Image (cartoon, rainbow, N blue to C red; front, side, top):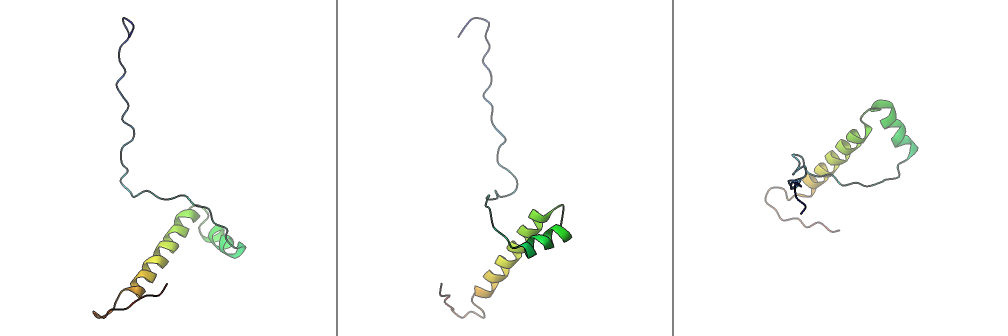
Length: 76
């Protein structure tokens, strides 16, 4: 190192986020679906689409869980 030069402290970055990471993807949607979200959720359509898909997945998972202690198998 040269004389008079000071060492810069190493930057640590932003650190872990408080929310789980989201994955980026692209989808092709029908005009009907986009028209709905553009009309009823123009400012937050992406968040609303995510909410609808999340609710659907959670409902599907509930349907596939065994009921009343019985063992059910799900064919895929």
